[in-house]
Length: 400
Image (cartoon, rainbow, N blue to C red; front, top):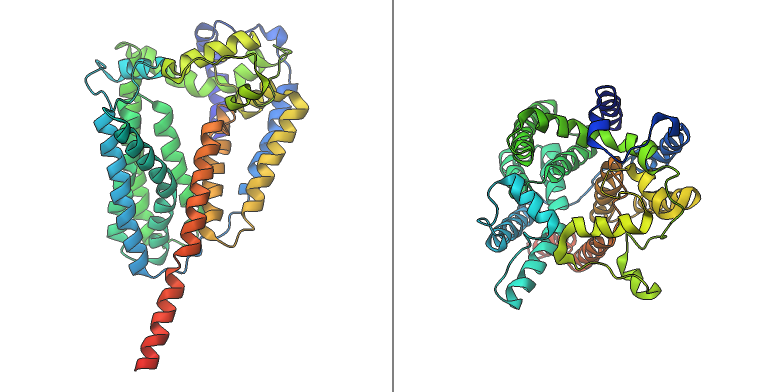
């Protein structure tokens, strides 16, 4: 994945796509091998926890897996429909317009009462907690050859509920991360899934990839105001720019480092002196704010090393990345498979996959992760179906 992105960078530079699309870039005389070497070393650090992934060993009966899957589908679909209820479907003229309105803050979710806002937050949190483990359970069924048909149906429902909001907001990135998150979960089980079942999954993945690619093209064309050639160029630029930006935009471009405040703006309340734009003004307002702080355009992708370098400097970047990777590695020591794999899933999605574009461990991500870990810890402590079933079997033997 990283190699493809790097090759796209070479392509868009050779074709002058990068130079035409990124007006803030510097000339080749500023290019140094140093940031790319440091990025490569940091890649080894960040990828290290995923070199070996523990098996997903869950001693649940098929009945319990099926029961949990049904509840999960209900919650995931409920969240999607409640999101649609608050989404202003008629506000944007097309998917391209929806994207521009969402990043500017003009397409925020609208609910008519505080009660609806609370319900929305609860459903969102539960969906974020449950969806990754829900996907794990479906692949777990594939590995056990148990109710494969139901697992395929549930998997399709889960994917559909995940990508609908992304499509309606014109977000290509969300589609990309949904796909690669699924591929990551597949890698956990790939050695245990029977070959016959794998072939069916490859067919399903092919359909998903084609469908997502279709919407990526549609969204890109609409965001380019009907310019098909411009849409293809923007897709190549989207994936090809991060490594180039690292060397030609961000490296040695500023002496300002805010040491975590950009990722955790709540720290601003401790330091004072900064006043962030309100969330209703959207992502673009935040990017403009930080552009003024750093003196460098913060809109472009910059890889996880570039992002951490802008925030902490070279030494600080390696300290933060090493601590993050160590946390993921330590999670593999957990005996609770739900907690262990949920943490690794979040790490794979927000650090490794998102690392192509930047560092994904932000304040909102950490808050979501904290809620999820508390949820799964309580769930595992107070709901132990295996123990209950074993106790039930013992009682039946005694009574018999």
